[in-house]
Amino acid sequence: MDKKTTGIIATVATVLLCGCPGLLSLCWGLLSAFASFVPGAEIDIFGSSDPSSAMTMGIVTICVGIIFVVIPIVVGFLTLRNKPETVVPSNEPVPPAI
Image 1: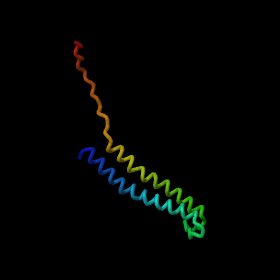
Image 2: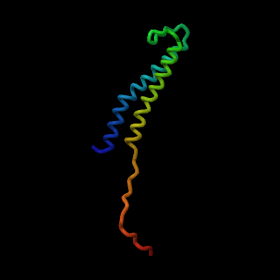
Image 3: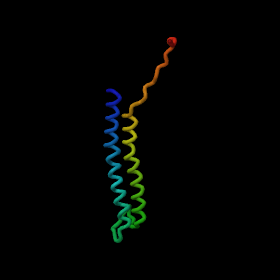
Image 4: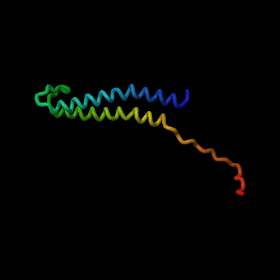
């Protein structure tokens, strides 16, 4: 396999394993943060019905979701970019200028 195919496989794998759960985490965090502002909402975050616990859970989940969404972007950039070619120095003499 060449490096381009390996990069594509790595990018697809990270999108499936990190990107999709990251997007779900972002949605859950937004929903949880929004629920903390709704009056009379039935909030149950680990046995707590305090709206501040829902807000904390929402903010933490949004942060984790952002990290999970950024991982496939970084992997795709690092594996699929065009790397500059290395110049091999030559020990041959330079021809004289005319």
